[in-house]
Length: 238
Image (cartoon, rainbow, N blue to C red; front, side):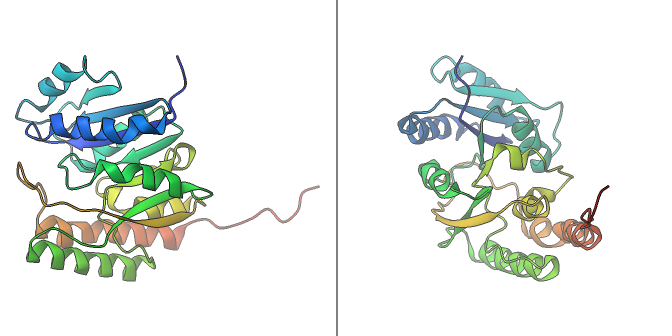
């Protein structure tokens, strides 16, 4: 079997209304690239029929791999499971709610170049006022306290070189800081303007509480990790 070049992975939690269109649109974006690819959807303990639906369409989409976690563990765990299961030289992460546009994946991949990560920047947000404001505040606070300059840390649409992202160890909530974690491992990051669409089906799983307050503790963890990171070099050996 040919080695996998691209792995696309997305956490899934009660997204049965979006699964079919999601897989179709990802296939439409990936097939023209002309390289072996796979799609890993990770069901994070959905209470609807998301996982059954994924299994039912596998015959039409042979690139699809459906994983199910043993309960609802959260977005970080589902994203980590997808990354660990991925076999590709390049790993693309995204959401399953179709607010990320699969058509942007080739642009991200083409921008990788000499970088270890190409991360999406949603220039025009298609959210309500509260979500837009909370995201702006969250991005400002994260960058200020973590000494970062990533303009859209909350955008899940990102492309990574496999060897770079596999070096990163994730803890609960730290999926928001993947570019920073890649940099801490010596990697390089570029930003790419991507589209953003309003959610047309299903319900959002995130609100002001987990965008601002809950993620503040995660931010303090990142700040501590950067502060305490070992930076020595061996100066001589005989």
